[in-house]
Image (cartoon, rainbow, N blue to C red; front, side, top):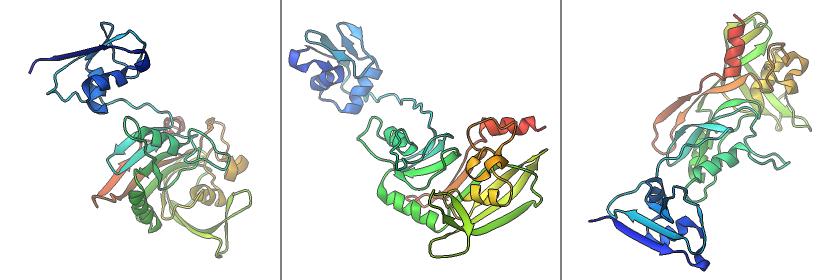
Length: 306
């Protein structure tokens, strides 16, 4: 079948976005219309238009040259977002690598541009509006891997895995001081002060059991590189546990106070990164495992240690 050429002059009442004119001309789906723009099939006043939302005014000539039997799939758009990078995505969930300095969810202050908001924007891109469903969190100044669900059913299944301590979660941390033991387990009950700080205390109905396993990876001049595995995932758990044994995470003034300072750690972020995340896919039932590289700031600090 030959190429079809459809054209129209924009009426005053139809001025606005060019894609709406193309949709009236072709009666194609939104996806195929985006494909027409991507493939250079749309012309405005004789010139190719690749911008799907390009504004048109009364009197403009819009024409479309296309083969009705072609698919005209839209190009996959590159997603650029400073708050996260994409690690894995399917129809049910998304695994992302969170940047340090980004809130996972808004606090009572109602902050904008939080991670859950940005991921929701990403999964709604070129589709109907959808919200990312939160499964677990990372502290603001901590980077690394997080999984979010695309619907509540999948979220509930993932949350249940976390409640049952099934996911594999490993962090890399640089702490102040030289740790004597090569590996150990810290097991306490965490309480919460009025200012929301966490602390270890005796067991009670108001406390949460927190279990952290750590292993020394490298001892440097006055700091230690650790691999930390979470058995439970309480808020601020790693930070509290390491600070309470006298080895706060670098860059953590909340729990480390002056002990978290180091002359060579000049970053605003903490030296804590969620490096490994593994769980059972809630739909396929298959085990999945994801790795994230050590952040450049932490790698540079270690290299400089010699």
